[in-house]
Each structure stands twice: as structure tokens, then as C-alpha cells.
Length: 290
Image (cartoon, one colour):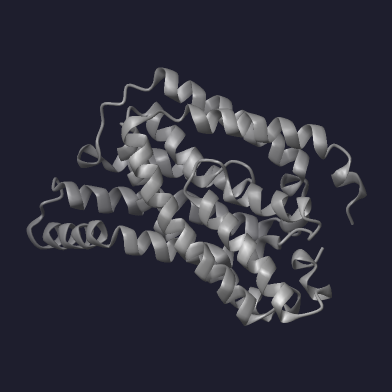
């Protein structure tokens, strides 16, 4: 199905409106542990627009990456400096250097898995893994795992304690986010809590770890998306990216403050409700969609 039926839209204004709504959805859901991919699939279906597709979904994620780069610019600068000091003086025990290594190692699994899907699984965009039923089931499973992590996590580790093995462990969880409904931030937050991280530090590391992964996904799909007439072209894409940027910034700031004083149970409850509602309301949808 073409992007939001924009190919059938009567005007550029309609295409921009669709892109604006999806940009807001992307911004609200990319960094909250509730799966942006799932919501970008389901919200348009609820509105009767159709599936936005993998390409457009990846491109508007660039708005989220702009937001996270801007929000964590000082942290990233310190990571670069730490890596520089380590290369010059061999000070790999420096927390900033260890964080940089952890981010690099944590990016490898999702890059390898993404390449395997893109080049080894033809038709993945229209596979059963992107069906509403699959998203619902995955959302419920991930909600239960996040709830379990809340119960058993020790919440003692902070960002300055990060080690390369933490990056690899959380990076393996991040690779699961290639399955719609998993949630990149949700899987990494869950893995971090299981690994003994304090909530706000876990979220902060999740954001930093996501920078290379989201950037690569967006850039890989950018050329194809801009050449697909069905997605409305350059202007609607820019509208979606700008909306995603602004809303992502607000979502990052809110979540970091929220997790300093609260647990993730609200997201567990939301994901359970989201999955159950999808199973009840969309049981026959996948069977009738072209």
C-alpha cells in the first residue's frame, strides 16, 4: 500500500498534513519505550491512510536523531574527547572513553542484523512481521519483559560505570528493535534494567546508543524515500522531519525527568493495553488489506 495513500491525495497540503501527524507520532514514540515503528504503522491505519512503509518511517527518524544530537551535544563532545585522550595516552579506563567504546560495540549487532534483513530477506516491508497482529503480540511480550526487569533489576549502575560489555549486551537487545513492536528504546531500557542500571542512566545510555543506529537507518532509506512519488516528495518529508525533531526533543527531556522519580510501570501498562486493543480491534484487518 502506498504511503498513507498520499499518492491519491488531492493536494500538497494533504500530504503535508499526513506527514505532520506522523512526525508528531514519531517524536512522541521514538524515545518512549512504546515502539515508534508500531505506532507509525497503526496510527495511519486507524485514520484510514494505509501503511507509511519502511522508507518513510526511517527518514522521519532523522528528526529524532537531530533532536538527540542537539540534546546530548555536550555528552557527545566529551565522548569524542575521551576517545581522543585514550588514543593519545592509552587512558581507556576514562569513563568517556569507555562510553564511546560501549556505543561503538553496541551498534555492531543492529548494523549486521539490519544488513541481513535488507539484503537477505526480500519483501520484508510487506512480511507478516509488520502485520498488526504481530505488532500486538510483540508489544505484549515486551511489556511483560519490561515489567520483569522492573521487578528484578538492582538499579545500582550509573553511566560513569559503563563497560564495553554493557554496550554489547544492550546492543544485542537494540537489534531486536528491527522487529516492529519491539521498540528500540524499550528493548535497550529493558536490557539495561536487567543488567542492573539505574533507570535514568539506562534511558540516557539508550538515547546515546541509538544515535548511530537511527542515523544509519535514516540515511540508507533517504534516497529511496525521496524518489518514491507515493510519499509526496521533498516538502512533506521535510514537514515530517521538522515535526519529529521538535517533539522528540520534548519527549527526551520529559522522559529523563520522569525516570529520575518514577518507575516504568506506566509504559508496561500502556504496552499491554496497546497490544490487547490491537488484537481485539484489528483481528480481521490483515486478512482484508492488499
